[in-house]
Image 1: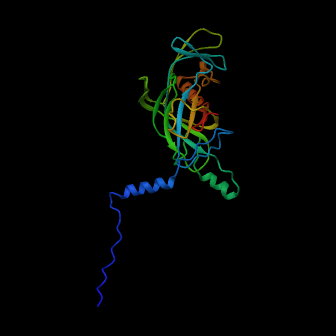
Image 2 (image 1 turned 180 degrees about the vertical axis):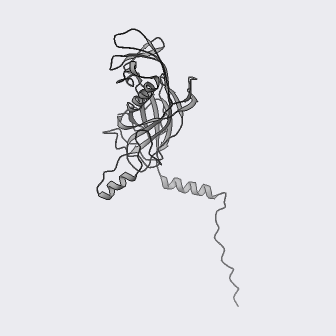
Image 3 (image 1 turned 90 degrees about the horizontal axis):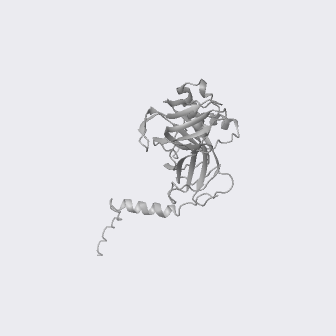
Length: 279
């Protein structure tokens, strides 16, 4: 009589402690090398990035068109006013990439496009991983560009970037504090042909936003170390042009502040820098 066979041994399973390491190894093997950043050739938009790759936002100020006089940046507006800014601060609450609008190829597509939330002047598109919400008080007089934050690209191509200015109760790096304001300005102005200076002390506590197109390629910003992201969206604001079109002598401080905030947002220039090299 032959001996009975022993029962088959159960397959061994990895311990609970080992499972995370096995999963990580599998993911690394599946991911492969990181996708190459886009080459800065041709138009920047539509900008197609590898899904899940990082996109950095860099904020900058340009005082082009202004001159430094003592403690103020002084410039002339398109209506002949002379303006001097000694201090200016704004609150930024959110920045995100905005997908290109799809081309409607049928009546169903046209109706569908009306139902999809997109970014517009004061309200941001919802649910895109590229969004960075990091409340920040900025000084217009800060000479250095700064990294605002980094988000994650989605599967779609991007054609613009949306910024949202918000009232904040927080301090800037220079110690100035906004008190639930989105913009605060200090300085002076003079009417066309006059040397008389009028005090400028204006602020606003309303939010405002702007959807800016990706205008082109630019050099890699010094504010962002290489390797921190494959692309950076550099957003430059121009305070000396934010007073254009305004009749300062007829405006209240609140109206002036809100108009300047709107012009500042609408006049922002958004460009893309690639880790693949400068244009």
